[in-house]
Image (cartoon, rainbow, N blue to C red; front, side, top):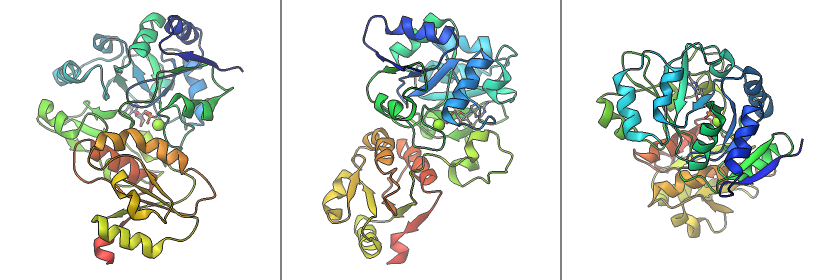
Amino acid sequence: MKTLFLDANAPDTAAIAAEIIRSGGLVAIPTETVYGLGANGLDENAVLKIFEAKGRPQDNPLILHVAQPGEMERFCHDIPESAYRLAEKFWPGPLTMVLPVKDIVPKRTTAGLDTVAVRCPDSDVTRRIIALAGVPIAAPSANISGKPSTTTAEHVRHDHDGRIDAIVDGGPCRVGVESTIVDLTEDRPRLLRPGGITPEQLIEVLGDLVVDKAVTAQIDKDAVVKAPGMKYRHYAPAEPVVIVSGSREKAAAYIHAHFTPGDRVLCFEEELALYADCAPLAYGREADVNTLSAGLFSALRILDDPGIHQVYARCPVGGGVAYAVQNRLKKAAAFHIVDAEAEA
Ligand code: AMP
Ligand code: MG
């Protein structure tokens, strides 16, 4: 298959991509979070192609992307008032809501759950594609399953060239980590995945939020969980990653004491000089956490190299968007964290 490369700014792009979606094909779409691998979310056969292209386990459901907030009513029933308030405040934007699903959505999209995840993304071209296609686009992140997510069209090309119908290049993703997922189907709203919309922002609107244990700990692969995707290994480069927490000085002392040739250090720009002899790679500035979220997956992809033995990673502290960066980095490290303060 020849993969078409479409510039988000070219006048025909939305129409061409929409036609591919309508006819059951796969299109990688830019969003503010990460690139998605999209298909007609109402067409079982088209959705199956997403799972095949990614090598994604079939019990890991997809997110349904809509062009306008009001469209959630086509796919969800018993929508609580809180969902409308969140949509009003954060859509289009990096927030996914889990709601009771209507029969119109095939089981393949929801992995057989009685809920569906919906999101209205903040990308003009992607919302135009959805509107022109006249169907919602089901899409997970466009990476090969288990690998770091795709935050540039080049990442998508690397993983899928020749295996999907088209890639729409909308430039690097602004947020860089996948959407925040909040489940609104239980008594209390539940955070299933942190992202660009922070827990603090959700609490401001909802007044309440439970954090699912999959956000903070490794879930056993045989566990029964609310969102099956949460139990799979994620975002992982080829070699082991260990997070080294603690002050700049203590972390540097620990890493220098353990570093051997062939290892790499994933750090903040402010720390590059400290690790000059430890093959450092910076993923953003500690002083601006948005640069860390935007740069994390590109950096993890550079480090996805079987020639590397071990990656020592520095992780931002605190809430807000840092909470999402911590979650992705901890998953990439399989929750392997060393406290340099305790080791010293
Ligand atoms: P990805 O963005 O690649 O991680 O894929 C979509 C994410 O949405 C996965 O983590 C899924 O587990 C999650 N998801 C999709 N549908 C549901 C649902 N009905 N309930 C909970 N989580 C969901
Ligand atoms: Mg993913």
